[in-house]
Amino acid sequence: MTVMQTTAGTLVPNATSDATGNATGTDVCSAPPPRHPRPDGQDSYTISEVVAFTGLTAHTLRWYERIGLMSHIDRSHTGQRRYSNRDLDWLGFVGKLRMTGMPVADMVRYAEMVREGESTYLDRRELLESTRRDVLTRIAELQDTVAVLDRKISFYGDAGRAREGERDR
Image (cartoon, rainbow, N blue to C red; front, side, top):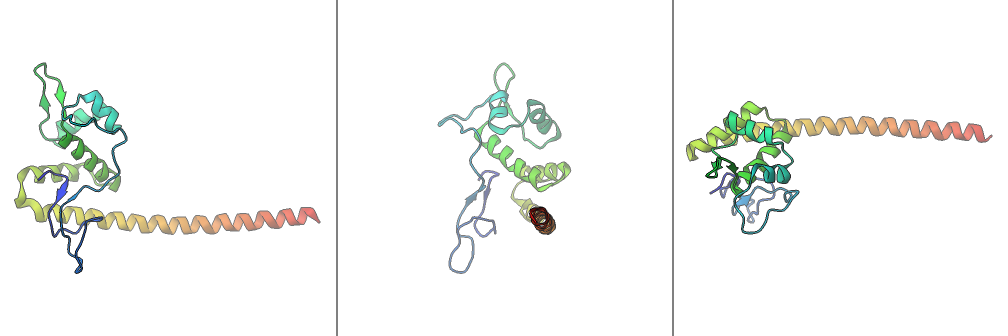
């Protein structure tokens, strides 16, 4: 199983479920396709290709490796980094974690737990559930903010129409 897959019974968005609501299969990280589709049959990419696929900088990719967010990246016989499809999948997931606002230290801790294996499933789930709660709280705050903006926009729209009506008299 790759890092990007979840096991049956794990509650994840977009997973298929049976009549009782239980997850029924493996859900590979449900995200939109990468900005630049990967070539079919290819599983070895240079750092510049990964930059093009992900939008990350080469500096960021090397930093992710240095801090332990990326596991060991294979090297060519000349020492160039060679990324795999699995590495690109992981980077896609890390991008989603970044979007949640998860601190880098927690992302590194999550990566370490992944490398430790199945014995860390509960801890990983707890970390992701905590992050999910934080995201839902921020979504609610943003929805409240949008409602305030909508009221102000409506107010200024009404005020503008009233002024135009006064000028037309």
